[in-house]
Image 1 (cartoon, rainbow, N blue to C red):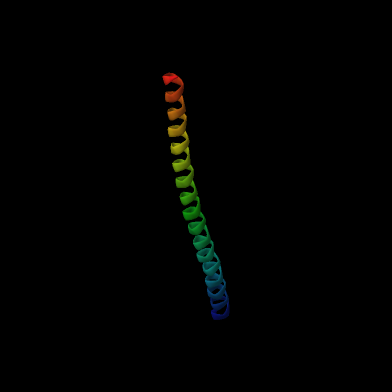
Image 2 (tube, one colour):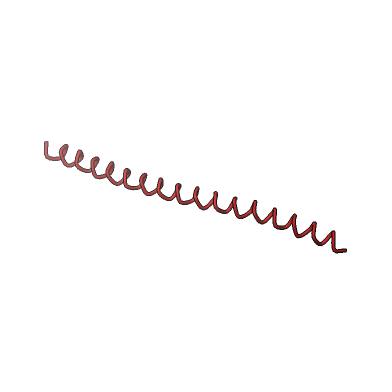
Length: 61
């Protein structure tokens, strides 16, 4: 009946709000993790370059 349909609609809207909020949270977390990964990759690159420089110094000695 109409009351049941209205109750279902209200419940559905509540669930949608929860899901939208969860999606926003997950997107923000995904973005943060992407930036963190980029930072780790840059750090790894610098460490590899430093190691190569040290190896070159050992060869020259």
